[in-house]
Each structure stands twice: as structure tokens, then as C-alpha cells.
Image (cartoon, rainbow, N blue to C red; front, side):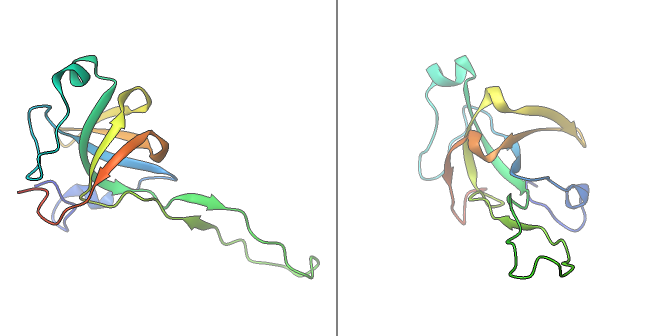
Length: 126
């Protein structure tokens, strides 16, 4: 339902760079551990929460220069991975989010720097 599976179209999406694809959560929902945002925060819509659906490869790391600069090198981009993982509950700043609709479902794309808190749990979707 919330996950990327082989039979849904979410697996064909590629998230770029340090961005995270999040499915926003209704403010009245809360996890089994009891994490929820107070109404005063959700009314202002400065802080939102949602489930991480997909993450980008991370921050690009510049290629290290070799001893022999005249040698031809293959330009392979390396990335520093993100902290967010698929299935995490993320609390993020709404002002940096880009809203979109895909397959009749609302999603937001945020840079990792906009994520304030992650909750990682095996039974998060139950």
C-alpha cells in the first residue's frame, strides 16, 4: 500500500540527488510508539510528517585527483548516502517541499536538509 513493489508504478520513479519522496500523513494519525504532532504545529503547516517512499542516491562526492593527472580517468560519480531509508516516518519542514500527485496519491519531494526527525520501525505501517 505505501511501499514500492514490483507491481506498482512507484518503482519506475528515480529520485535525484539528496531528495526524498514522502507520502504525507494525516495529522490525526500516529504510530504505535505514540509519535504525533500537536495540533498547534500542524495547523500552521510549517512542520509536516509522512512516510519515506523513495530516496535519492545522496550527496555527490568530488572525484579524488590521482598522482598522475595526465592519465585518462573514467568519470564515476560517487555519492554519500542519505540518512533517510524507505519506510521511515519523517518529520520535515513544509516550506521546502514540492507537492505533486502521482497515481491519484499526494506526495512531496524534500531535500534531506529539510528533514528534522526520522523514526525507523519495522511495524511502522501497521
